[in-house]
Length: 101
Image (cartoon, rainbow, N blue to C red; front, side, top):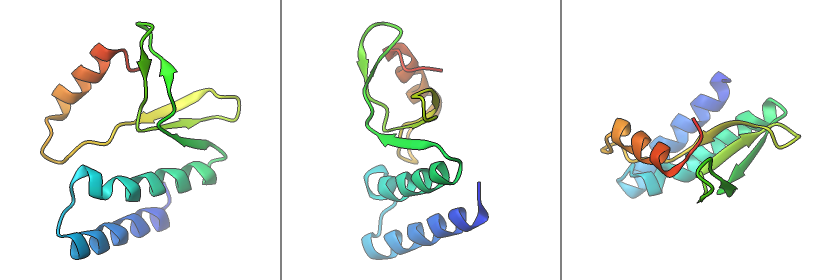
C-alpha cells in the first residue's frame, strides 16, 4: 500500500481523535473506508460498501466493504471492529454466519 495513502489515513485519524476525542469503530470507519477506496482505485479495483451477497449457507450477508475486480470477482472483504473487540471471537462469529474465508 502506498505510504502516501497510509500517511493520509493516519493524519485523518489524528484529526478525528482531536476533534471527537474518540477512535471508536463508528468514528474511524469512514476514514478506513476512504483508505480502502483510494487503494482500490490505484490498483484498478472497485470498493463497494455494504455489498450484499449470499453466503455458502444460503443466508444473506453484507460485509462492511468488499474489494472486487472489474468482473465482480472478490479480492477481499472488510469488517469494521472496535479496538476493544476480541478479534478471534469476532472472526469466528462471522465465519459461523457464512462469511467467506
